Picture (cartoon, rainbow, N blue to C red):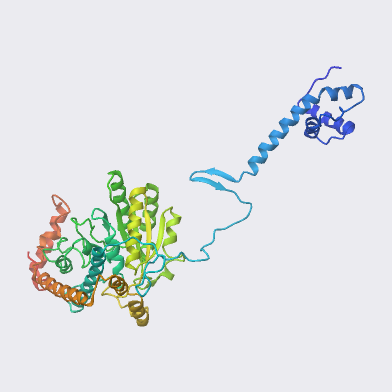
Length: 477
């Protein structure tokens, strides 16, 4: 009997025969039976008609068919039930459930602190050890910053300055973070970080010169008060526009990385700055380029008069880091020891591992946003007073250094008396120093001033000459 096997029809006919003669439901069923039949089991006996002989002689072929079907079935099962998918960025797990990521965690991200509200070390707290010399300098600088703020604020209220913004309540963030950095680290500040400059050696006289905009001011009077800058101290000049310094810091950090410098860039900003697009662009840029930059956010609860509840629904700022693939930590910004330890550790990671770090420092702006603001219009005086007493960063750190025998009431009195005297003298000198020349308004941008700029200078001089009573007489022409 001659048989011609056809790929489609012969399988169908064979299956009918197997069902009728042997009770098999499929070719794979028959193949498995033939493969798995125990050795001692009698050989399957079939009638010796041509069809039966065909069935017996085709057992080997049938077995191979079954193996092929089983293999195809297994491959299909592997594809459909695979638990992960290779995708750019890593493997992604599958789930048969509709699962939306929750808008927030059940518990808020904890806040790292070392000292409790009374200035006592918390049991089993982890922190970077500081020497007596560094600890005393941190405290002395915080006191100096506080006194400087108070005197400049009063000077503005007396009409001697056009504007001022204090860092009262946020001294620990300023000074302790600066103490944990290296002088080679490049600073991109907002306008509430004068303590970083103070730590690096900016004198009270230099602060006063800038605020009065005299000829000794490095900005030549072209900036508002408190918009400090120092090339020598690696402190970029403050920009009044919110958050523009953040992407600049990432670019500088990437440059430091390319030059293989043992340094990082550090940028400071408030919670309001995170509502700007610059913040988000900078975070993504830093993560992708693996730039050694520290993002230090002073979350003091208010963007001028706008509370954080009107700015975002996330758990503060710290959770935003993970969305961009950035390691992050939340710190008690009124705990100088915690701030020092967090920034010290973050700097080490940023440089050694070539990565950005986000630090959210929880604090409170005890002073008004600036001299143009009255914060009692949008928050209670009792709230301000409570933070100033119960969570005061200076008193907490003073308690700790006193408990170590590093500070005394006599040293406190001497420090405050000396700083106040130096500050008042700096104020007197800066106020009497001559203003920058009018020509400085048009210099330092172009090597050769263009015609339109020269024309502007000509018109200004002509207007002053025509209306001298409307312009300050102490500006040299």
